[in-house]
Length: 340
Image (cartoon, rainbow, N blue to C red; front, side, top):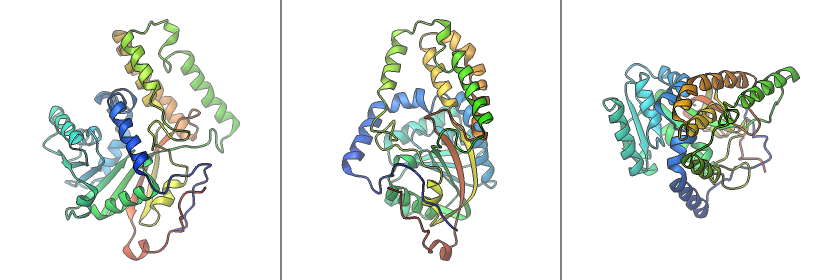
């Protein structure tokens, strides 16, 4: 398969350093709680509404009675959602005992502990496993890694995949604003996002003249301190979205992409604003939550259809991959790392 190197003005680091790893760890120790509550994980109901469409696709990829591995599962919200949406056996795997303990508690509280389990497992231990999985998920953490780290994770994923299994990669991709789109399409999407902002649903309901209370104000101030590093890095020090063709190049040596779908762009930002507003105006926030999110999903579908996200936002894409046969995988891919 002919591969493309990513056309991007920045370069993903080939490898990490102890200093940048320490900075990344310190960032998560400071911001993980607020990240989970407001920025990304949010509530189970919001998860299902905004992410259920692609989580259901993952479940559909799994044969009846098949096993799913969620690598780097963190606190386990995705594994639990997979269980709630029909997966019969999910194993969440992470190297952090503290995260796995939280994930196990979440599974028990959610009533899916009979089919969703969690394990502490290092990279070395994963490489020595003999059990296999029908689907392996890498959900939104490869963009926190260097090229060498990504290749190591892909090697591990390939090792634990069963024959005929699928690798699912879900990661942010950054497109130039309005790339290859007609003027009318761009104008329409810009108009819709302008209307959303004007009606206040995407920016804290400013026209309603709310007075944020101290807890909301302090939470917003902490969220504003999350960005670290110089663009395109962030919010965490190692975090960097992928260029449009970068993932294809990274996986090309061992995997073939058999499916690709743009899943999400900015709807979780609408949810974040609503959850922040709830700290000051709980009744109003709850009354407006689902109309707000319905509007967000409508705008998001339109943006994803034309690959026109709001300026500065990422498109989260899902890649479904199958392992190449050993002889084919042994051939050089032609990908020589990021373009400087």
